[in-house]
Amino acid sequence: MSVSENLQQVQQDVAALAQRFHRAPESVRLLAVSKTKPVADLQAAYEAGQRLFGENYVQEAVEKHQQLSHLDDIEWHFIGPLQSNKSRQIAETMAWVHTIDREKIARRLSEQRPADLPPLNVLIQINISDEDSKSGISLEQLPEMVALVSSLPNLRLRGLMAIPAPQSDYASQVAVYEPLFEAYKALQAQQTDIDTLSIGMSNDLAAAIASGSTMVRVGTAIFGARDYSA
Ligand SMILES: *Cc1c(COP(=O)(O)O)cnc(C)c1O
Image 1: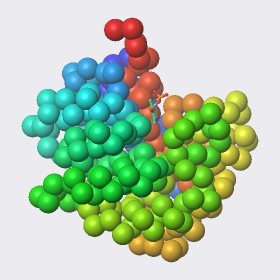
Image 2 (image 1 turned 180 degrees about the vertical axis):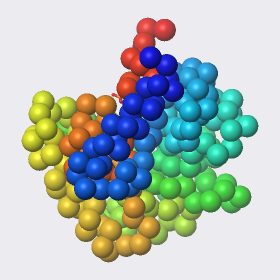
Image 3 (image 1 turned 90 degrees about the horizontal axis):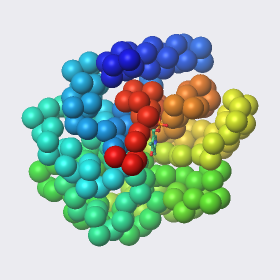
Image 4 (image 1 turned 90 degrees about the vertical axis):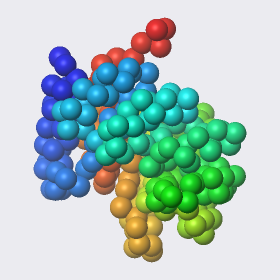
């Protein structure tokens, strides 16, 4: 199957799941996760109508941003772990960062955001289930991080993101997402601009969309399996 056929299939799947959970199809945006894939694949997805692309590695994200700069309506999302010595490159190129979980990174991104660009859209990453992962803050730490991010002039807080540890079945996936969905709704009630809950990957789309996802992050189902040996 081609990238454009895969993309169409995923769009249909997402729309059908939205309907199943009584949500408007356009309330769930599709982020095409293109890490390790050549720019020709991104271009194929673009030609098929895709505009949101997600990258995980700073060097690769910056290179693709440069190579596809003529497609200036692409919305670039950085979804990988970010080290402070690389924050400038991200502040200068991306429209969104999903992985805010440290004060230092948030402060640097705001300081380094160029004045001629709109504020950087950011999501706070929550560690909801994966105790082995060093990424993400706990829900207990969320109020403090919200206050900090909201105080930074060149960041615009849009919501929350999570990468749960894989669960085998739908019910467990929904159970893991439940406290996150509650925290997201509370944040939305408290603050304007909050419109994004970034959850859902190829293997848990249904549970994520049932749990309020407004942005699913799909790689393999669009671009095929990744070959890390290449
Ligand atoms: C790689 C990645 C995805 C996409 O995963 P697939 O299984 O290829 O759909 C989504 N989110 C994050 C944070 C990722 O790193």
